[in-house]
Length: 369
Image 1 (cartoon, helix red, strand yellow):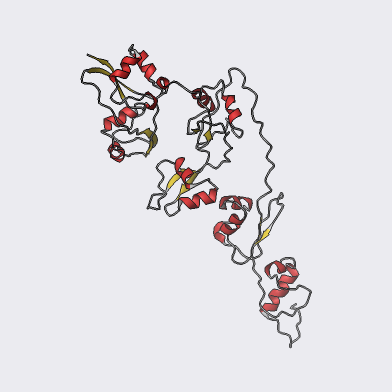
Image 2: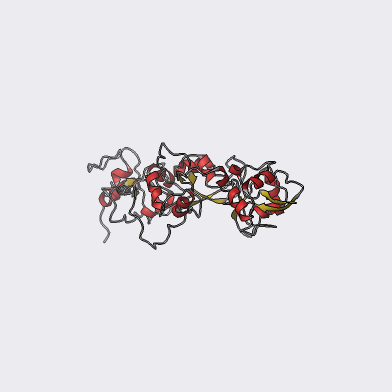
């Protein structure tokens, strides 16, 4: 049977919702209406918020809950908690970003940071026959959309500067000019203080290892780098880290040749465009600078290539043999390779040779008539 109601009493929708909220969700009403006093009185002077939503179950290990209020968004909550949007959604797996937030919802904030144990300044030596340390890489990448600025990326990921972002992403245009959506490297790490006695540094790039850096610096073992870099972890080298390898001084005739200018050549980019961009003489010269890879007439894949630009001195008219300089060559090693006394090699290239500034692609005359 229907319950009997006295005729003079007509229940209103507002009172029905208020009673239902008070009876079924007494603990939620003050969260939705902070100014509401739930003291049992049925008299209400204004409208009451009675959002209806399905609150998802928070994980058992949740230590703290944030109650959503008007005007808050998933992005603002994530920024206030120092999280990315994906991390906030992962902590609240029942919340869908497109569904919208309502006042009174409970969101789980980030868990307290785990204590970081101090790392010993130098680990014990590796056993004989142990594999080499892993190569450096880009530890974290990010999809940079067309309208997003480099300054926004630097601020969001806590990078040192825009210059650092460009240094680990050669070719990245941060001038604000229109660009296409690309994937960039956003390695974020805490740089350690370099020693006051540091006289040279090495910037880590993909493929570098502690073994290789130590060997180039003439150190006895890769573990010697730990004495110079208190925060170094040779098992987690990242692109953009700066190491002071402190190479020993070398005689000027034993300074190795290097490539001092690099270019990121994108897939299907033509060699002629790179030649024109850097003012090289021809595509043939570009190929000579990159004899270890196939890049012309257009690159089969995105890769880093050498684009050294230097002034090649004129070789003597009587020169009948010359040598293309490659990384690691020195004036002393070239003279020994061709069986030429070092003074003769210097005399044949006196027009412009500087043994302390050898670059990949230079031509040295090794024999004359």
